[in-house]
Structures are given as structure tokens and as C-alpha cells.
Length: 213
Length: 318
Figure (cartoon, each protein chain N blue to C red):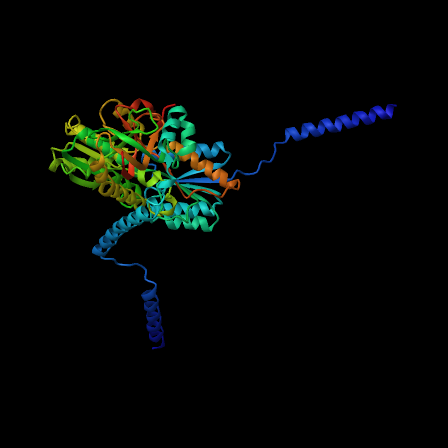
């Protein structure tokens, strides 16, 4: 009888313990899918906040596009150190740059500008099509991969930032881009060591503005 | 005078004997410090290169280095960690099997005062490993996706072979690829299935998919081992000329097949560069350095039939 009482008490204590410290959790598949969907949603929110609160308020940190282009032509290595940044181990350099130029052509690839301080030839290509990759996310130097425990979230951020470029900046650019128009821009570029000095430099715009002629 | 010469001879004798004695007795060198290299699997040549390169660099730096094979099994990986912590290992170069499942092993090592340097694959934690040197799989597959659209066109049917579902690289590659390809509604994915980064499974899975979908235009594979398996399946089905295969890793056999025009493209991951750097990080840690960046992305480069001449031996040719 005494043993039975001890066994019941022990079982009760164990049940109570595992009630608060369970050995495993059963999670419905739908709940997991919902959590994953929320994670995507977080990336959207994060991207929007970053875009409005940080990126758009940091455009004055961008390097002068004319100086970057001249440096890339003269001494690519120096241009990288002076104006660019390399993420981890890579043969590419990222630039955050801004400038003003006149539209010299509008092609399927995008809007081609000659910078006001340039020689009148095509200096910059502002692409107007679909945007892919991490150039915008990494180009400004405002985000750090080490702050994101799961790289999938960091990569989702790229998708969202590219979406913002496509939906807010590019329609405005397409509307303003007439040959001869004067446009101010800020944006991000990625230059591979094999392509340094090649013009026009592809710059994904994060801001465009039509200037008076 | 005689005494003087005797004393001088004695001094010379003792000095010579002392020099000869110290030279003839080998110096008792201190035992070398141990560095462990824990690799997710050695059943894939790419990971063998990763592990062997890290080991070679650690040996060059003067350590006793040993490779442990986790056989893609977190339990085996945990056992490896228990053993090497108990054996007095000073640093671990780690290629995890599971982004979440491997965190506990890294934390155990950290609690034992052993630094862990992750290579190629990450763990979903930023406060367990000392540093993580990771291939930028997402960007690499964005480039592959763009090239895929150029090569296959904006319409067509394709199959995706995924890697291990618990590994972040699987999803970073898949998401990078889909971030491009999904923007073209004419490109239809008729099947998406895991072949667990394994060549034999790649062959088996694609053979089965081809039964139901004989009219595909392309196969995108999350690694080169699966791409090799997929290519074998296509050869066996007589479809290797009409179906384009895209891989990821930069494995030597795939780079050779790209040069022969049999595989369309891959992403070069530079395993040797990552492995050497990780061994050097471990060495620097053991010499007192502590300020390592938590995540160090390693760029992935697109290898195609146009630029394949620049690549070989798991990297860029110099």
C-alpha cells in the first residue's frame, strides 16, 4: 500500500514536471506554415522600415559618381579602397554613389546617363527591368550580415528591397526618362575586378529626381 | 705551465662533450595542439576537398589535425563533438549537418572553451560559433537563375533537385534561383524534390521524375553531386542533348563537363579558400586574436561554357 502511494506521488510529480518542462512539442503543420508566412512578412516590414528610416536618410553618404568613375578608370584598386567596400571574401566591390546626368538614350536595359562632369558619353546605366540579387542590400553598408542569425531572413530582405526599387523608384524613372532630361540619382553598383573601368556603370537606383533643365 | 695546459684541455673537453651531448639527445618537443575538422559528409568529393584542405593548412601551421565524418547525421556529429572535447582539442573547424540541430554541439564546445569556426554551412545562431565563413549561396543562385533564363528562355518546363531540407544552403540556393526564375511565368517547375545533395539519389530521383515528365527542358540542382546524378539519368534516357543541367559547387567533374558542353553552368564556391582561411582563423585565435566577424560571406562565381577556362581545381586558375 505504502509503495503504491509513493508510486502515485512520484508519477504525479513527474507529470507536473513534464507539464512545465515537456520532452517534446507537437506543433500543427498549419501553425508552422503560418509562422513561416509571418517570417516573410517580417522581412517586408523590416525592408520598408529600413528603406524609409535609414536608406533614404543616408543618401548624402553616397560617393560622387563622377569621382568614382574617374577613379575606377585610373586605378581600380585605389577606387575600391577609397570609395567601395568588399563584403567578406569576394572579387567584387560594392559602391554607393550619387550624381546628376543627362539622358543620352533609353534602351530595353534601362536609362543611360552622361554625367554632368563627364565627357558627354554614356557613363551610367540605370536599369529599369526586374531587379535581382544583393546589390541594394549590401551596397550602402548600412546592413550587417552578422546581425541576422539565419541567412535566409537576410536574403529575404534582398528580395523585399528589390521589390521596393521596382515598385517605387523604377516607375518614376521610366516616366521621367526622356532623351535630354536631367536626372539626379543615388544608387548601388557592384563591380567585378574583371570589369573595373567598364562604362556605362550599372547603378541600381534607390532614388531618382527630375531636375529642371 | 703544465697545469695551465691541463686545465685548458679539460675545459675544452667538457665544453665539446656538452655540445656533442646536447646535439646527440633529441630535444623533447612539446606535443602539438590539436585542431579537429568536423565535416558533414565525406561521401561527396567537394566536402573531402574542404576537409583535406583545412587539415593540410592546419598541419602547415604546426598543429595536429584530424578529420571527423558526421555522415550527415546530427547524432554522429554530437558524438564526434563529445569525443574531441574530451580529447583536449584546441579548436574546431566545423561544417555543420543541420542549421538548427548543430547549434547545441557548437555551444558545448564553446562552454568547454573551444572556439568553433563554421565553414560553408551556417548554424542559426550568432553567439555560439567564433566565426562563420559561408558561401553566399543566395547570390550565387541569383546569378545561376539569370543565366538559366538566358539559356532556357522565358518559357519551358524544369525540375528542381533540392539538397538536405534541414540545411540553410538548400533554401538559400533554391530561394536565390526562384527569386529570378519565378518572375517569368512561362517557366514552369513540374517537379521539386530532395535528393539530399547525393549523386546516387540525384540519379534515382530524376529517373523517376522523367517517367512522368519526359518533356522537360532543364534541371536545376542544389549541388554538383546531384547535377552529376541528374546528367547520368539524362544520358541513360537519351535526353542529355535536349535537357540543360545546372549545378552548384564548382566540383571538378562538373567544371570538366561544362568545358565539354555537357552541363550548362555551376556556381564556384571556393572550398579551398574557405578551408584555408578557417584554419588560419583557428591559428590566430590560438595566438590571442578574438575580434572575428561573426559571418563572413564568400562570393560564388558563375561558371559557364563562356568562362570555364578561368576555373579548375575548386577555384580560379592563377
